[in-house]
Length: 239
Image 1 (cartoon, rainbow, N blue to C red):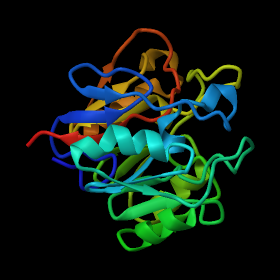
Image 2 (image 1 turned 90 degrees about the vertical axis):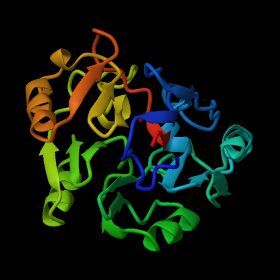
Image 3 (image 1 turned 180 degrees about the vertical axis):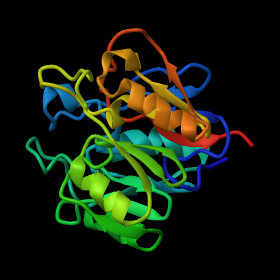
Image 4 (image 1 turned 30 degrees about the vertical axis):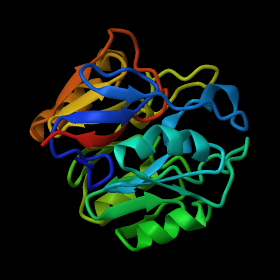
């Protein structure tokens, strides 16, 4: 069945778009987006945004790919009006995180088509960070882990449970570090699949504690440092 609230599966995930493989589910790899910097060209969360149910929005850059890949599953693939650009924030037009009834995004850079859809479904929480999804990992209906202070403050003001962490220990060469949100994703209501080991992060113990308090366990798929390949985007789950 379709996941009704983006990034928050109600049962074990059966279909996802991801740059890293997660055990036990069907993973569609993101396409290469030549207009982006080399290290970001296959980041799913830059080229696809779920808005709930069968609806997903993507830039013109990836529309043909996702139409072919997702339409057979019953998805309605909606083409946004804004192509992706090589420089920040032009690469962030579809990078949105949803937590509970809120969509956290930078309204000044968000694609207009996507923004209208989100406004009809969620309460918009404006943030300055263009990489909103990269910077935040939903870990429960009203809970997120984020390495961005602005997202943390906006979430806390809205009554969400938020943990502010350091992104140190997350790899994304040639950059100094990547984002934790781009190195993980929920693959079940109680499982956060992480593309690496939390032991390499200064904030690893705090993340474990925050997850444990919410009945979520981390599934670390390898023992090396977490690698930011773009967020795992869950799209369908069993039930």
